[in-house]
Image (cartoon, rainbow over all chains, first blue to last red; front, side):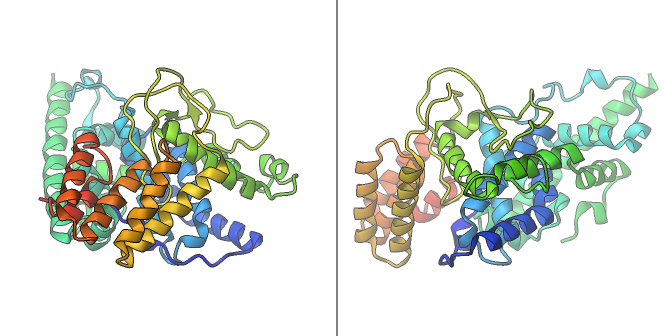
Length: 189
Length: 221
């Protein structure tokens, strides 16, 4: 797990205006990333917004303790935990269980130009991924974090993070290929 | 290592990856988050700021309580499925607590940012402790953590025992248990650390603390 407490330093009290200003800057800089991470880790758009807000509330409470420059890591760590909790409560990917998605019948691969459709399909692919692999995949492939950064955040050795990433990629590619084949087959019928 | 989208991916994979990377919250959702945090330039935030305490600071406190409520179960906090439109006043924690089914309290670690697991949704209840208690819980655990890091294992164990006595149903019991494993290991009582670590993992196999416990007890694979 991410050892977020590594990001903590001795509190240096900020005055009210400085605290508000810092929280606001954090929000402006990172809210999209936090929201998107929560989305990719399985929450719906509105749930992700609520959880993102929760993440910033936690950050507000710990503002004095968050080292400057570590805001993003802190928020990532918080988002991951919130998503894990949501996962355990069974709210992750409220999608159909059927990977082949009969509801997709008739849709064309070309329709992927429709971003929303692509996001929906992508989430279905991610829904098949084991949570520990999913986190690493999302942080690396979607948010562009390095494997050392991910290892630190998730709290695993670098080799474990790299190994999880390899397995996550294999899982992603395999599921995506299966989905593409299914879609092509159905559109050709 | 390069990202898949940069090399070696099919066009289908690229479509999926770029769509995911490009997704943004809608302006409405951003406004809702801002309002909930008291950051909105007008409207609800202004309303919240009307008291003696700045609106956002109030929200911080409410947030703390909310995190406390998470002890009741953030797991139960639902997306505002039915709250697509933000209310005119600040909605500090627009997450909605889902009703029903009694269950064990679900501790949440603000300190370590680990939100506790409780797979069983439960009826919303008052927070197990008030804000002051919650702060005291955090303070005790912060001290215990500092003691563990400073190698003062016995002091840490003493603080953790105090925490247990004072907050048997505290919000951060998991965090306390993990610290106890670390403190036992640090005190040289490896056998007890391993035993407690195994118990923790058995009780909370999905906890985000599991890897930390396994690191502390040398059980990591």
